[in-house]
Image (cartoon, rainbow, N blue to C red):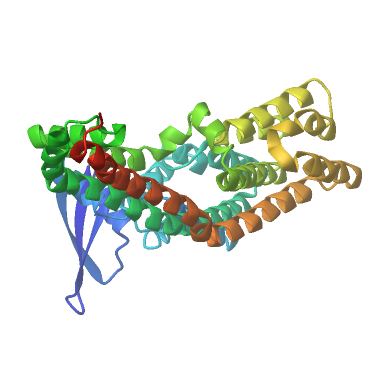
Length: 408
């Protein structure tokens, strides 16, 4: 259920409208973050209208997550009550989902629930590693520190994601335009050329046959035009699910430039999670298990799971790293040396955080130059499309001499 809240300033009469994804008017009042000199009117929004409202509203993501946790951590650090700390974050987040979540958590805390238990009711917003950190922070009495750490990590992830998304705009536009050009040609140019080519009475190239077949399909079944556009939409909306498949992750690791980016992103995420867990005094085997479950690439999920198994049977972390370093690619042996150094100096948490920092810095550099890295792939895709169209259209022209001057 979505609540549309109209906030009116009693002094100026200025109105502001916000959406809160919650189930009651009382929670909507909490989630809209009104001040003492403001009044509200609330309207229930449901059905298709609610879906459209949410579709056009800011989406919950790492930016909201980073702002929320950094703000809560800062407030708790100054001994502000949990309820007040949460209320202060309502106007920092932008998505209706986060506003509703804050209102729900405040209500649950007022009913006697712990902060970590209340947050666990929202697995779609908070991953297992974040929830584990919150549990550990509460047990160790370091919740403010843990929240600030989570906020900092989420903000770094948000910056990197923005750079990557910005770099993907150009190839996305090229791909969509390429599909649109083929569709337009299928309705206009190809039907006229098909009549000419058939009059030749010669065998047509495969590319020409494919283009004519595609044109006939669109002419006789115009609704099929939606199929390629729908396929692109499904690809973009289900990209994370597609990339979570092992076969796709293995394929990506074989691409020259993309493989480096993927490995650094997965390693940075994994080692940052492990560093925060060990710093929060979580037992090493539990920290490795949580890190494995939170890893999005199966190579690193397998790596941290096997580390946990080695630690369970009595091996130390350096020995475990040596035995499983092949999962980390070219950086495996280097990381083994760092872990050995950490074991000798007793600075395991600091070394894990340093490894994560190094990966994040390298990832930021790659993300900043992502447009230059993707440009060759974009040009390759564009070249394949243009080359296919040129060969399909002009290929039959090469046999025009055989048509005019019949061979004996």
